[in-house]
Length: 286
Length: 167
Image 1 (cartoon, rainbow over the protein chains, first blue to last red):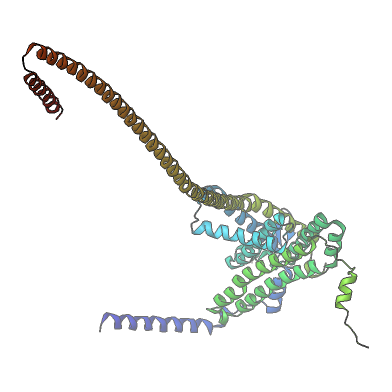
Image 2 (cartoon, each protein chain N blue to C red):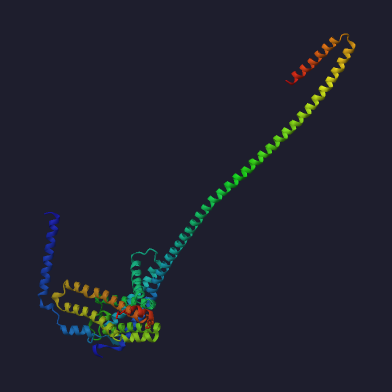
């Protein structure tokens, strides 16, 4: 038996043993969850049963996630500011390129969608996108926290908490409203108020998108038989993709509507010259 | 509130996001953008400098071409002036030579005339001497024919000497 054949044989044996052990575990009723799936999903949506303490207030675990995500992002930014940015080179390295690409992408998005007023917009959509992206990925960590009822709860994505989603949606609307008023005054206010459904749509889009991922993950984890291999795919599909897509969608929508409401008013000329009328008027031979 | 919406938590989320926005803007967005803008301005300046230098070089090239063209004309002009000056010099030299030649000729003429006068006067005085001598001999000798022969011999001798001296 050659070394190659021996390797194949051992691999097959190990795989068979692993499969048998998994089968034995899965067929044992001991490992089934006792928690009702309806209750589990209701908790995931409403967080009524897993409130946590936050400076003496009972809050949803998503708020703790939000502050932790902010802390993580700010610590990362501080390290980058101190250790990386002073060493920036004219020809960028890999990490510098990533940073420049991220900043340049949102700055370019702001400039393209809102050519007249975009300095604040670029910074805002950059921060919002970073928050959504990192916040959504935070769900993958599965950070444990103690609830008010002294149970262990896993911290969810900040925006899977409806309050977080509403705050970001409404803040985006307020930013658009402020931009409209500052650039075109009453006309900007009117344009923004015309989009009255925007805060609701933005908030619930974020909430729904992130919650759907959370619910599917909860559903998958509720059944022991689905807890192998599948969560990796589900995690990738509903977390990583959501992180990218939702960050991009909110940034694009905010930039687009901000650009619309801050666009300077151009008076349309209604009077057409008589000569043009004559030229365009068809001649009729009687 | 339905769906567990809580205004206090919304405000807490807003506070969190405002902190995040301010921190990210100060720590990451602003410095990176500043660096990128600085680099873009540097490259724009380099580009503008290169364009300016290119324009200057083009301008200089045109100027040199113009100068080259004018230098050809100038060279031709200078060549014509030199030719003219040379002609003038040649004419001057020629006229000077002619003047010198005419001066030499006039001097030679004067000298020749003077020589001629002197020769004539010498010949006159010599003839006069011969006549005197012949007369004396005629008077002193007996026969006239002898005296005449002697006179002719003396005259012939004198004439042959003169001719031989000139030849």
